[in-house]
Length: 318
Image (cartoon, rainbow, N blue to C red; front, side, top):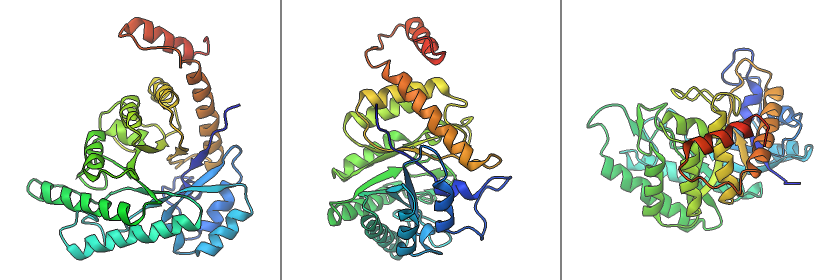
């Protein structure tokens, strides 16, 4: 039987009942305790510095030791208001330096938890108005920051999670192609990409195509699964809206040798978060099982043939 690693968004366990974010009563230790109740969950990813404000590294480690969960990655979140006008691409050199130093801190925390993966979401590196951002200077600042981090920390894999907008009107790295161009410019083996299903839909991209191109050259370090209606980052259950696209994504993940974690970046705002996570795991296991049956299928350009094959697979007739 295929052994799969399933991870999830820790903050999901502190929301629900109409809440979008955990309130002040939640601590990282308490969230870990809730996550440990999920059947089939193997891993977690922690946000830095967010998840280390109320609890120390030692306290978080002690909480994890009481569970069967491990840490597969540290997700860097540059906090506002300090970085609200950008991190690596900020016009203020002192802010750029602080952004780099924050990643170095996160890298040290990653080592503490035995993981080599630090995920970077450059949420604030963007703009709203024409002539607001110097795209060339900003690109070069971003590139140079990644080169410094990659060279000083060769044991850490840095992956960029792109999102076309939100919280900024537009972001510097707003497409898969832009991220791959940045990775090419940086030209370091420990710099890659994490793809988020909902973010790809927001950008008008096909998740399977983006994943195939990133995997082809070994640039895809991480994957975040969810679903949405496409206009915003809804964070819905896996396969709930775009089932065919999710199956196609799974096909390319398996065919092209994706070896990372299946991470659920979902927002159970009105759902029971434990049950919601368990449903994600059950669904993704089923989708991957079905995709394993597709490995010998080769797309030929015949629309009706491929559509019928996928239709029968989705209905469980294959």
